[in-house]
Amino acid sequence: MVEINTAAPDEWDTTNEAPDGDEFGATDDYDPADEYDGEDTDSYEDDELADELTEDGNQSEDEPEEKQPKFKNVIEFVEGFFVPVIRRRISDNDGGLSWDPRWWAYPEVVARLTALHQAWEEARASDSMSAMSSWWIQHLEPHLRVILDGDTGPMANAKADRSFIGWPAMPSDPVPAEVLDAILNQNS
Image (cartoon, rainbow, N blue to C red; front, side, top):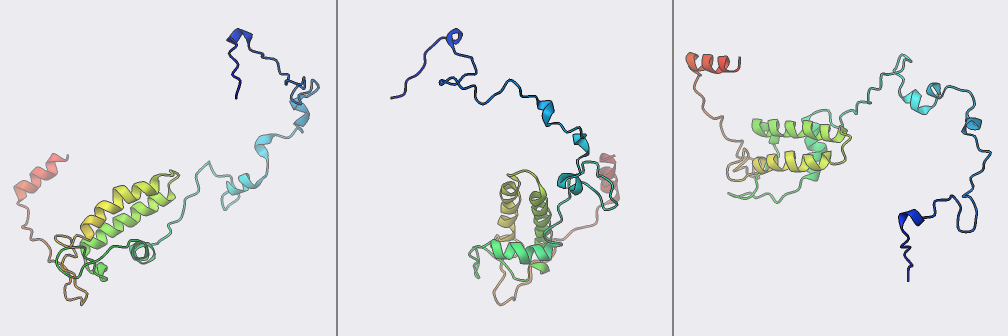
């Protein structure tokens, strides 16, 4: 059974002595100045400082080292991360999830995957430990629902025989001049 000390605060023992009388190794003759060797500690030439030097030998101005992208472009991202990692049951009939290996033939898919790639690289370079989790939840999942939607997504009706190459562009009439002026002046 553990004994709990119920002494009032004014009865607490505040000496630096251990129960056996040892003073925790502290000596009266310790002087922190004895450890100082006279060098200016701000000018140490060590690995940390060497890491902060620029190519021309000058010290950088505390600029964080920029993390290089893992994938140079959306194609490398899709081939090196997206396709190997994202796994879903794809259906070759109406409904379910649709994916066409010719993803690059669908402008909306390319645009969404490019956005995903850029957000992924940003999350990867982030110092936040939760950045990648946020990427999965806030970026990937909403885009993936649209990209793979077998009913209305850009690759809906994609067939294994590659007979479908996407929906045509949505029709768009030219914007009337007065509407264009109103829109442009609204943002001014």
